[in-house]
Amino acid sequence: MSAIWGIIDFQKAPEPEAAEQLSGAYQCYRIDRYEKLSCGNAAFGCCHQYFTKEAVTEQLPVYDREHDLLFTADCVLDNRDELLGLLPGCGDSPSDGQLLLAAYLKWGSSLGDHCLGAFAFAAFHTDTRTAVLCTDHMGSRSLFYSRQGERFIFSTAVLPLAKLCQAGANEQWLGGCLYSSSAQMALFQGLTPYENIFQMPAACIMTVTGKKWDQSVYWSPLKLRPDLRQSSEEAYRTLFVDTLSASVRSMLRSSQKTGCALSSGLNSSSVSALAAAALAEQGRSLYSYTSVPLPDFPRDVNPHIITDETPGVKALCAKYNNILPHFLPCWGRDAFSELPALLPLIGYPMKSGLDLIWFSEIYRHASVEGCRLMLKAQYGNFTISYGTASGTLHQLLASLHPFHAARLNKIYSARYGVPKHKLSQLLFIRQKEKPYTDVEGMPKWLAAPELIQKYRLGKVAAGNLKKYGSGQADTRRQRLNLAANPLEQMQEGMLDTIMGLIYGVLIRDPARDKRVVELCCRLPVKCMLADGAEQGLVRTYMKGLVPEEILDDLHSQGIHSADYCYRSRLLWRNYRDKVLAALELPALQKYVDAALLSGLLDRLRNTAAEKLPEADLRQANILYSCSLFLQLLP
Image (tube, one colour):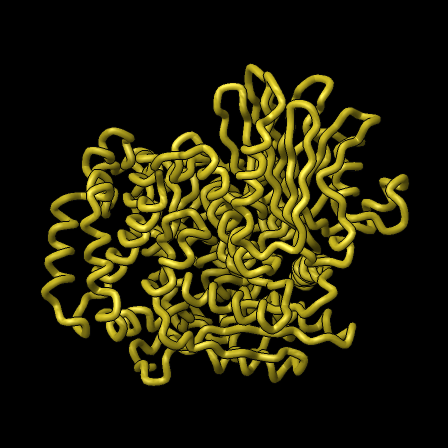
């Protein structure tokens, strides 16, 4: 696993100074070895990180004289044993890069039918002056690119590329980012906050020549075969657990310590349970890291909200005694304090600054304590824990299965203590709602009205909602679209990749594995409400593997960074003036609704720290992030 970069000039050899600048921009990250290689019209680089034993002797970039091919890759493969059988010419213990190159030479653009894992690679055919770039099925590793006249440049991290290109701000991306209050940053697929810099989507093959480029998608859940039928509920359970377990086990390749980001939620508890069981067979431990609120934060804010996830984590540790827990209160840190140091490394404005504090603290602690592999399960919201009662029943009725719907409605109502007619009424209301048709009714959060009109942000947001659904009464097609939502893939791929570069850890999410995604898309929708439980795949099928205290808590939900507002009020005086100055930055004004910004500034100036509203703190945090980003630009 590594970071890669390259410069291709279709008219002449790349300038050495440009290659040096691009390579030098990676010096701020946790890299174990730097390599670069020039050949004719191309210069490629690889910034190696030693996450597996094979990575230590990895030789990339490499020039294959037999095929006139310059190749570099950022990859960790999950089906090495299978590939070794299919590619016998690679030797006994080839590196992952060697296997991926052999796969490309044998299968070309069809290599996605054979390779599993997290990867991105670039190949330049020197005889035809043709470049080929590829990303894995779920876009787990980011890859950015820019075309500048006769030059084509790519990079794993966006900031080295932006610096080389002297890229300015992309007002379309920033307008889309500020249009919605959700944590999702991108409204437009492929765009980045930099002008003329793009991010490759998942499962993509790009071919670039001197005159044009073409993109094609080689895999999509929409192309999967219909529902995967099993003979019994137990058969569904076995298939689900075996598939998720295989995904987890295939990722446990680190020869050093393995850690996980662990909450008391269904997703991370499920992944951590399977990882702990697999590591126990090897006599190894799993090091878990959990964010906890400050000791004096009120715990009884809402009886249905779990603000401190310590009890659930301890219950999992009691079941698997090889889980060694770490509870991190993140002393003296909040959503504002981390941005000045992290933003110049990430290179993106952050809307998830509230979570950034504990993600960065977890990865920092894990790295210091020798963990090079970190598991997470964030993507499970779209796969293994997908499924509400109303959404499941809607899809059953839409697919003409009224008897299945009636039976599950009865079981669900009894389990949750909800009258059967109440869910029917809710379902009827959800079916009548068409939120994606009301463009004028879409929330217009922080974005400037001029940008909303210029880029038709309301129509784009409504179109995305129509395509990916709201999670309440979605169609089967919306469910499949959501499982491979390119906007989520780009964001999570970028963040996992860059945080790994910053802290020197490999971040993997088994809930995002292609095999798991395919299974969750092919299972009959009734499985999402198995045994009448919402999120039925994990809540029902993981029984015996995850503690009952977690699975049987039907009415509570854990929340990350529950005390973020409390923290920010305590620390507000430390950076109040810096935040206010940043929000008054002239370059920021064109992107933000002037009236909204003026009112926000007045409240931030005149309200006592302990009384600052939660909404104002979040808006201030996001605008502060955007201002810091704009200050990075030339």
